[in-house]
Each structure stands twice: as structure tokens, then as C-alpha cells.
Amino acid sequence: MEEGIIPGAGVVLALVSTELDKFQNTNSNGKIAIQLFRNALQLPIRAIIPPLRLGSWIVVQWLLHYPDDPVNGYDLHEGRCVDMIKSRIFDPLKSIIGELDEIRSYGLNSLLF
Image 1 (tube, rainbow, N blue to C red):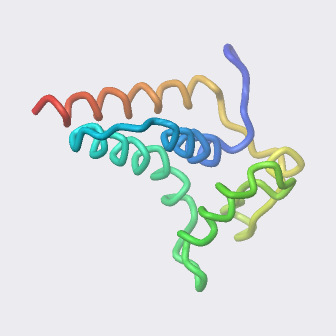
Image 2 (image 1 turned 90 degrees about the vertical axis):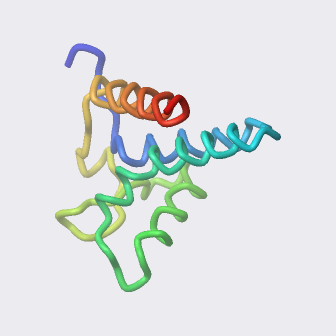
């Protein structure tokens, strides 16, 4: 792979969304933009995790609050949370960069129009 690989792109993007909490924006448009970015970053992991008895929201929250836990992702084929590295679930870094660029582009367009 050109740029490399990363375990579980959906989890990585969701973890990036937690960094948005560091932005203190009092402007209502800024708050809306931050929430849009947060939702867009969490969308891939929410789409991967099917509706469960506990709900995908609970699994996503667990993954976000315990990022250093060795069980740090969701294996769709196994239907359970797993260690992404041991399970050999990797995504190209190039795809994550592309998704971030799409999210940025969508966010800017939604604020302009």
C-alpha cells in the first residue's frame, strides 16, 4: 500500500470525532458545523455495526470511550467486538484520507449553501 494501512478505519474516524470536543465555538453556525463533522466521522462505524439488541450506539460509545482496549473494533463477519490487529482487519490509509477529504468538502459546501 502506498501510504500504509490502519486497523479499522471506522473506529479511527470515530475516534477523530472525539477530538472535535476541543474546539470551543460560541458561534451557532460553528456549533452546527462541528456537530455535522462529528456525525459524518461516526457514520462509517454506525453503518458497519448492525442494529443490535443493545443498539449500535452503545457499541460505538464503548469503542470511543475505551480506545486503548485491545478489543477495539467490530468484526461484521464475527458479529462481535474484536482486536482489529489480531483479527487482521485493516484498511488503506489512503481511503481514510479520502473519506476525511469528502467530509471536509461536504461540510464546507453545507455551510456555504
